[in-house]
Length: 580
Ligand code: ADP
Ligand code: MG
Image (cartoon, rainbow, N blue to C red):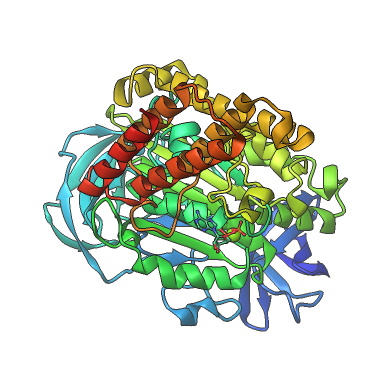
């Protein structure tokens, strides 16, 4: 029998319920408001009283309204058809604009139940299988989508039957498995999984050992992110967090992309709706949306739904990772999610931590980041979830709790700087504050040695050093004046400007410059370092400035020309003659 209860208190989305039986933390319940059933999640249980956060507006709710508990946690449905879908945090299908304005208590089906998928069996009768093992495959777009033994299945099963190749709907029983006590269980193409629990079903989770190419020079060249790695982009409003994330989404070397747009301005979400489906995948020439799932919540949706959205997005990524695919999860912005946690914690009058965030904010964030990673599946193949989140610290203050907690959890830090954005030096990633801890991993260093160039990491450090020296020189020039410093200060400053304009800056809106493959990044860094390795002397600082400005101009023309085109080589020749 289901546990039921009645509403005893309401503070906005936080509702207290007196219950008549057992309820569990994170259990889902429905509150009946005049026939409309509103979904809510238990966040605290205290004797007969449960605090639940309602995923909808609680307008009109009153004491005495009835509540029914479901005995399950917030789940996501996993199956073919997730890709190219747009959902909200509760996996309501927002494919049509009508659905963006769902009525209260209205929930839509996340998967198309009528569509048929062309299925090919992988497992054979008599095979021994465990959770996450592959039973068959359908083509989702052009990606092989594995139909797996559900993640919730415990122990070993024997395959009793598998459907032969053919077209089936997601609810068709495609396999019957027998458990160790001889009971038969049916498997369809759909399984459910509680979003707040990490999906298991892999053999091991070793340290990442290769990098994920993003086509963005400040990332790949200076602070690369590992495949299965974690990173975050903090930055004040308007500094380019969203543009950078979209660039990574467009170009990142991943099979599947999940974008969690979590409560920034409402019009941004509309932009995702309209722009994303238009984008062409530079790797395949097909629509990027074919291998993308978007989860979106705007700031005008209830806070609880925002928290759910990042978990829903992560679970979908883990599902595709279990198929041996490379997945990229982007969440914009995780601050909105943290604020949702804060609102709830404050309403419950919990003892607050720093800036009134919940005391366990740090562990909530690191638990979430730790779900990313590269895994070795039971069959020896690998899959990865790479996670990059943005953080929008109020007033650009990087000492606030969400940024600090995220810094502990993520291995890459891409700090966007207001003054770089003001000068239109995009992407505004600060070259000296930002870092990638993967550059210290021996496996990553040897990977870069083999795939990019021997001694690559040393070159990267050299480039960072040029920027550091240039910054120091600029400070001296500012204090002592152009004529008060030796020529070498001007040369150092202009060498760092050269690295800045040619390597760091990249036009996300230029068809060629936007996507810079690693091979091309190697060529440009080598060229820039060759230029910077030389000693230069000038009669006066104005000659120095003119020389470097002309050089930077030619190098930027190279960035805007197709790699290895005639034009590219002619600029290259001109650069070489200038430094001869
Ligand atoms: P945020 O998400 O941090 O609030 P946005 O990503 O929306 O900021 O960026 C704000 C604006 O900055 C963009 O509309 C664009 O004009 C400019 N911008 C940001 N990054 C770039 C880039 N890489 N190239 C060119 N313009 C950029
Ligand atoms: Mg933004």
